[in-house]
Length: 310
Ligand SMILES: [Zn+2]
Image (cartoon, rainbow, N blue to C red; front, side, top):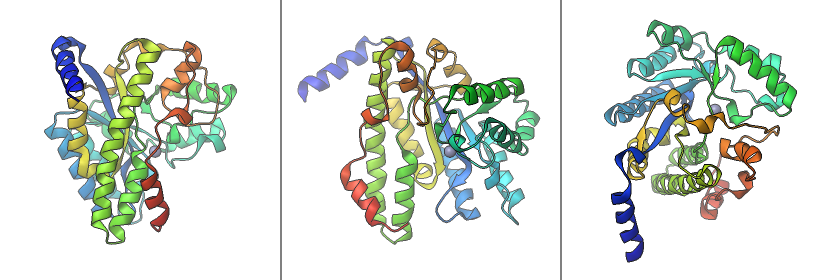
């Protein structure tokens, strides 16, 4: 332990200020995902998420599924949640209207779902003089076969969209679902354990993805972190950001992170898995890896998940 601590101190001293790591925070499934689907939960969660981001002066982009805005009797109130993001200085992007699975849809159908999904947030961005257009693929499913993928990416380019990749993630949606169910069951102690476990798994997955990146590029790259707008994250956002800071990260906008040359690496992936971009780049760079190599969620949590009613 003493040796490890000494090494950390040495590294901290040896790193020049400009060697800081950078990460862009991206948050999917806006306006909000929660088990109870109530407007009040979405309002509380959105306010908490944005408060933590603003307090830490962190820019972020939220990816919207507009089907979740169109709840009868709540359309204006749910659209107002999106406006809150823009008012807080954040960006919005497209996550398709329905959050459909591209593996099961044609390129034409999927393009229509993108167009259908920009009716509310896009005018809000334009009114704030924000012209950037980003798409995050639901489930990170980018198209399976090469023809379908190329057809869809041609559509995106013609409409002015750029694809938002992902290089860091920790299955936060899985922890959030279990957390919500334990709370609904009246088990706050169990929920608190899941909360801590999600933070520990965040560190485990950051270690893994950072290592994978250094193996591919021989350096750290400007990362893109994926998380979701859910109740668990709204309660631990500040703590998550602190963990990034402790690892030497500073926070940048998605467009700035994407200026890293790593994002010009060829991507020959033609499969149906939703996975981080390191696994895709590894094909071109001769370092094959895949989701099966990733650290597993601890088995006690998998057991708890199975034992907790849906
Ligand atoms: Zn999503």
